[in-house]
Figure 1 (tube, helix red, strand yellow):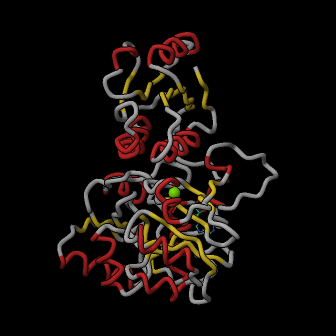
Figure 2 (spheres, rainbow, N blue to C red):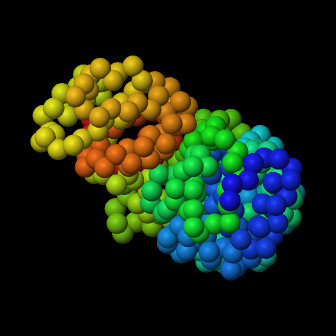
Length: 336
Ligand code: AMP
Ligand code: MG
């Protein structure tokens, strides 16, 4: 079933959520695979549908800042961040209240909360009367879904339906900040940048796992960071450098196999002869972020054995794009 954003359709979709069914919802970041966060059985079906490891907790979506204290124990930082960035693409991790079932938090005593900006997501939370647990709407480990078509491709037979809210504006998942320790820690970069958060909380640090692969025996602060992620089916290699150096590297290393290149807009000419898709202009990370997952999904449709991605190391939103690409290519990121 595909619902649109009319009042009548939103009421129907909200009723499905209330009944414990799975409904995919648009947000400003990516599509979410939603269920009533207070209904254990409904939440269990999210994990089943995605094939998500049960040690990876879910984000709970709310539509009222007051619900911070309904579901968690907010501190001063939480209110500062909520005032500045909510509704919006920022998730906060706080000590959890007992009303949130353990399955949502994967057994942790903390919970991740977000108040999304997308009007459709807000309407569904209000009409259903439930907080909505929603991880990104993709089969676990694959690129996130940023259109209703992507969602149906992955979940046609396992959900009640998707509410089509158009293409997601950010295209990258929310920024995740843990507020559990002595100082706030950014666990996952997103559209809201570390620099913006430091304007409100100067002591914010960035978890090491954001930019590098941690040794196998090191505990990660966020279970999701430990899992393979955003990966296309093909073997994928990231290359940092200008288009000319990247094309020379590819010429030296590809051994006649069907390979594809994900490059920057306007630089396609350097890769004549290869299958080429561009994902935004060099230096424009907002544009790259918006198109990243849909481009990776397009490549998956082409049955290609190797993908080279021309990447940039960036600050701001660029850090989020780099973080996703690093995982897409299983940390094989080479400077050329
Ligand atoms: P997604 O599948 O895109 O919704 O990912 C949600 C992210 O938030 C994952 O990286 C989770 O591991 C992380 N997360 C959710 N809840 C918590 C929590 N209580 N503590 C730490 N990380 C969390
Ligand atoms: Mg995800």
